[in-house]
Image (cartoon, rainbow, N blue to C red; front, side, top):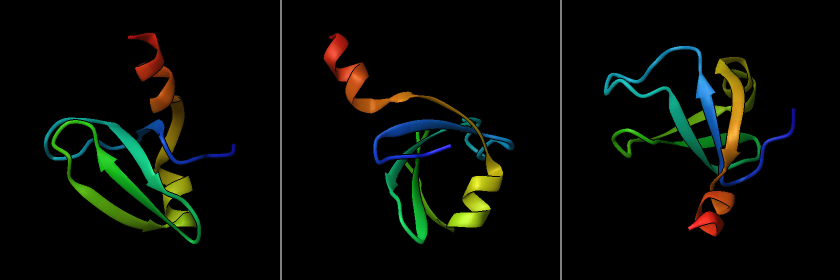
Length: 67
């Protein structure tokens, strides 16, 4: 599956804040993910990020266009 900046994804394990949803802030060799619960930002190597992501939920821009 192809991921782009702005995608909201769900992970296998939840963040300590309780959220499983993350926004992809940056893609490339590393993925930068921002927790949708508390705003914490992490960087993961691409293979590790692809392993923990279970599904793509939606794009951030689509959510803004609905309002």
